[in-house]
Image (cartoon, rainbow, N blue to C red; front, top):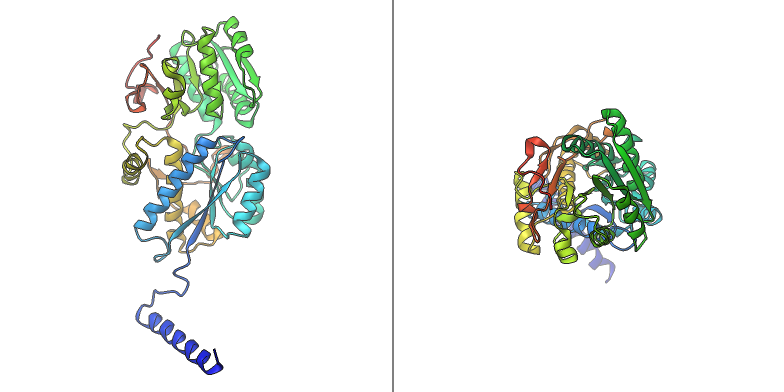
Length: 407
């Protein structure tokens, strides 16, 4: 192309741009550039890969919802950048740095493992891009009062307090804790002991810690069976090993005569009955969602579309991935900017509609800094093959839809 041709191309390009700005004052030459959000979550071992997959599904449907409604900041599309942290701090740090420095994301969601979130949180404070805990529950995450750390998930002290109140009401006295050797396992054992003291409970407690990579829990389960607990609380972060625990507890005659309480909602997944069959009946589990709960309009949209797409009800991890994308969409609009510093300011000041209610991120005391917590409840399966929507809520009293059913 000769110099004269180049001149005419530049001339007409400039004329078109000028015309757009003249007749459409809100038009920006950068309007076509997407706003990027990182989704960093465990998608490969040794991380909790199923949780990561559910979070990714929810986030992708969140972006779909936002873009179908016109995008953000005057019509810009929301683009997700997926990163696998494998549930390890090293990969989490490298992935977060890549998302921020190379991909130029405005925020990062998807954290599952507390050890990863804690490591990434320290780096996020240096780089200034907000990071969300989607299912990491250690109180230390928000207790550090980092400007860049946010969470919409239950924290360990609240979870332990809830099951201690349930134990008090049901009259259990001898409590076994089977906990993995992670921040999640150690944290919940410590919080249970501290909660007992705070509530004035004189329970008999026996805690056994196992290596997260172990493939046989029979020795620990036999030791607990010999101790004869009234209730066994299972503290696994990876459902595949939790399924093994239930099978082995059943095979040695510990469960279901001794109730097992799962520390989070892994029994609510579609593969639960495929993995356990009749051996899984009568389990108790902590949940943050029941399919019969009333949701926001956004939550109802997600539940309906997820059921159509995947042929099953979404579980909490997927809801939370979806909800965090919607929170960030609203915060971007409030900030009128995709700059991380502006986004953090908007997150602290705004009220946001998620899937399950109105979310705020206040500078609360202790671990309640930038912390919003979902409702906690105890569900029980009372017949083999039962859907989560038919599982009764047996605690707390104000949500109760059924009583504990012994085998």
